[in-house]
Image (spheres, rainbow, N blue to C red):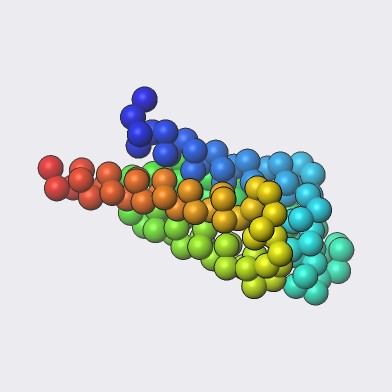
Length: 125
């Protein structure tokens, strides 16, 4: 399996996993903390979290299929940076917890750059 395919699977899997398990199947306490820190009621917070989960699942599928699209990959990097900044602004203490957005988002951004770099090389051939 090529490094491009490994990067594709890992980045897509991450979006799917983070959409399905901590947001749709069971709303994780940290997810609830993030949305409730925006001032939403419990019901609205749950709805926002589940909506984000649906969006992440859709984006994971889109990225898996269109991993050779420069725009999808750039949107992925922007999304990962935005989510990291969102956590930093609303719940900065989470940045030093185990399994935090720094240790997940930055490697995913790196893998996305591998995919973007591969696109550049492919178009130069």
